[in-house]
Image (tube, rainbow, N blue to C red; front, side, top):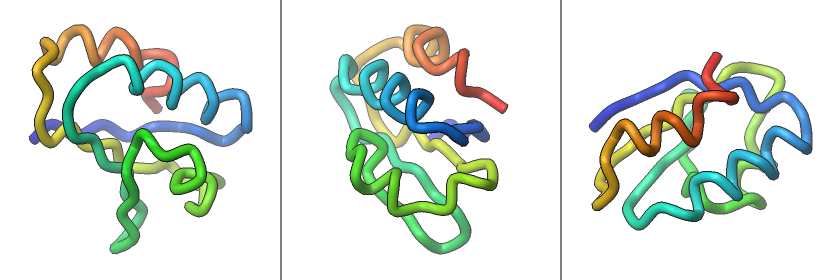
Length: 77
């Protein structure tokens, strides 16, 4: 598992992030505290407190980690 802290403090950032991560097969989570949602779920992400940094977790993917990192680079805090 690999984790990153993301800054998704606007609607456009959330939309862009979900569009970027949907291209990859695998399991990705977002977490704030004990609250965890599927990172591909735009509604799940909007249910989080986005005024704070959120933790993005790559649990399993068939893609190279470097490809995922490049896709989420604009959102890394």
